[in-house]
Length: 263
Image (cartoon, rainbow, N blue to C red; front, top):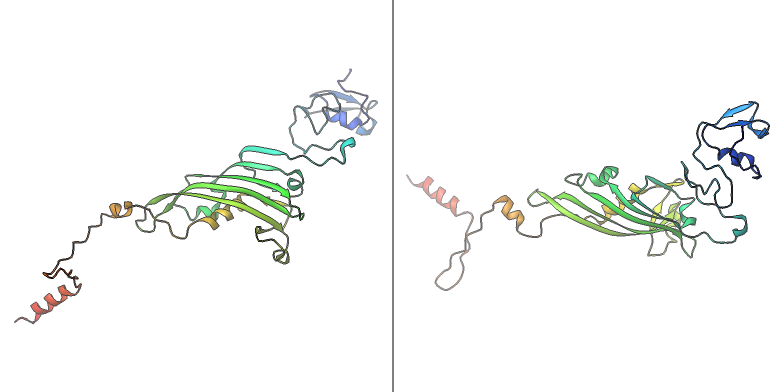
């Protein structure tokens, strides 16, 4: 049978990966496939032709993602920024790629992915939104710029009732691999220690939200007083000369003592 391959391609294994589902390939055509005379291709959703416009890293339909490769004639061309916009932020990023590609991630993150921050809240109702831009500075530092915001429920410290709190913070981080590099950072950058090739997005956002959270949270109006049904204090009495009398809290004890001493 005649397969739908472009045999003018120099890389035969490249075209082999571009096969359609169910095509059987003969060993006469592809001598590097092994000892089997026929190989059944089980998984392939790639288009069948190999061309400069559509390669294995630029497919029209692909089950996986690779960063676009630079063409042979464009080696000296700097990599253009790649913007990635998603409804949900990724779990982690690979620091070996995102800074050179100047990637931008924007999306939301559930509070379940932030356990330390969620422990400070009254409930898990709410969502965290963030935007992160990765690039190299003029000093060749790997820096992260962005912002994080969240609307959450905390406990009011006066009435112990839920309180809606809106948090917003900016992100200006520089990656460091040891504590000795922290002293050499400029004042505008906050250090972020790394111990591997990956950064967990949730941990980064969680740290920023914990730092910008107020130490004490309470309602700004008289809602706390109304919730606890506090009674307003009586107006102090005034003497004839206009001075206000201060009520002594021990007057009740004085009356009790007098009644006790009376036979």
